[in-house]
Image (cartoon, rainbow, N blue to C red; front, side, top):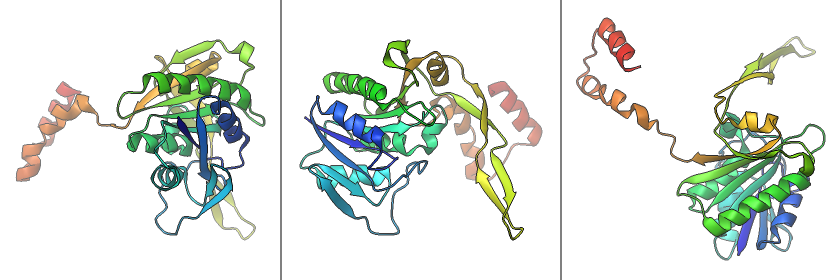
Length: 267
């Protein structure tokens, strides 16, 4: 039973080490991770430079690329056979709601799913310090179930663990993705030469989509498990946009009043 572990915080992250050690009780662990921090690289693939693989220990490799690069190299070149499961993490900080669109941790698991391998992303809430031992225990429990029962096709699991001692964890909750909102997301400053520069930062001020939301589970002190599908098509609106096809094909657009009326009826 082979298990592939990767992350976006880099090969030397203590979260990666804790995860690999916890999963060693379930199978043969292979670690292929970025050689440095690659936080928020999303699903980036390295195309503009060669990738270099460095063996650091038995079944442990670093790559000068992204988490997605690491999963591809591991599955297609490094490992003798594809793993039974891909586990990405443990990330320093939660990946809730919209975070999954930017997260290298989640993208590592997503790439495993694209390759047809059951995959899990694991993130640990924290600030300066992180309880990776707690996150690793819950990760191992989830991985054990995935190995026994599998996952639906094109579905990965996004696991977030609250910043609490294990005895204070209130339970586990299956959740949906939240929607976050930031105050002042772009910070403008001046350098010593009077030239403007910018930081993408800001403070999270509110959440929405509160029904079974992942952020609520974390606030309650519960482990959040969110199933995510690769297919992000909005199937509920396909028929609405099929009505546009004749007008696009013939380059005839209904008058604005008719368009607005139609949108009100269907919206």
